Amino acid sequence: MKELTYLRPTDASAAVSAVAGDPQARFLGGGTNLVDHLKLGVSTPSVLVDVSQLPMDDIETVEGRTRVGANVRNSDLAASAVVRGSFPALARALLAGASGQIRNQATTGGNLLQRTRCVYFQDVTTPCNKRDPGSGCSALEGYGRYNALLGTSAECVATHPSDMAVAMAALDAEVVVLGPDGERRLPIGDLHTLPGHHPDVETTLAHGELITAVELRSSHLTRHSTYYKARDRASYAFALVSVAGALELDGDTVRDVRIAWGGVAHKPWRATRAEELLRGQTFSEDAVREAAAEELRDAVTTEDNAFKIAMVANATALVLNQLAVRQGGAR
Image (tube, rainbow, N blue to C red; front, side):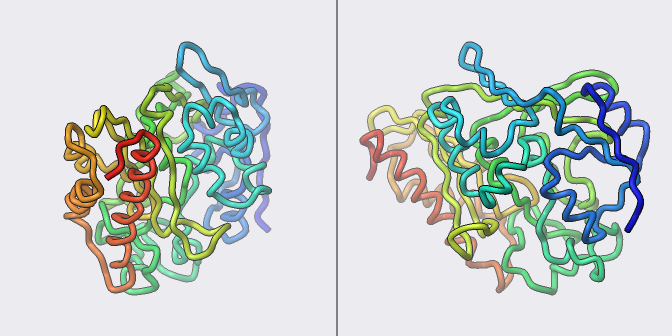
């Protein structure tokens, strides 16, 4: 068992300083992902900086803008009346992820930063460019049922595991980050990265930067949102594909739409091309399927994961049609 130095700072600035000043230090939140990696040998920090007790556990709404502290537990966020009313896709995504026990422990900030569940990444006996840059990608020729099909590279085909992050991508969340140089904000779409030649780099955060909150703005669109997850078993499984959608109709015309996909890329995939095709169009299932097909035009598949093309198109049609029915505009 590797010896660790354990620190529990009393404020966020002290936590940031502790991690930023030591390349072997890591933040510890709920621990539902990091502790697994410590056991597996995937992560080997020498210092753990516990931020789970910092006062970042409130859900506050001011003038239609909801601020969710990074330490808000997934179960509390899913149960929030504000979230269920203003951001139903987020509540549904949280309830679709993991067991009740894990949701009670997992935090909002930690959920966003959880790492892939690719079996080769978690097996230290196999080559993995994400875990050991330059060693190769075992998933390219190995078990590929969960592999990505959008935004992949020759170095990595892993997918992002979060359900919550997919919903937040569709809801245009903003991430609040504290670093050595102060606070900054970034759209959630700019938080995660595609693998490119450096799959070991998973976010745009610098070492020592700490997510302190996530902010969402309520609107007619966000209130008409939902989430669907397709998986190998009914519960406690990661997504084969998932869809977070939001739809606003003006009669039969699509006034606005948001679509984000999970299980298909290294990051939550915002289907902006499909959204652009649907806005201003008469809503119909055919139109949704045509837009999804255009978004998937650059998908790269293998025999193992080719089924995801139809699955994500079907799931997108299902989600948007459900939302249209509630507004009286289904076709």
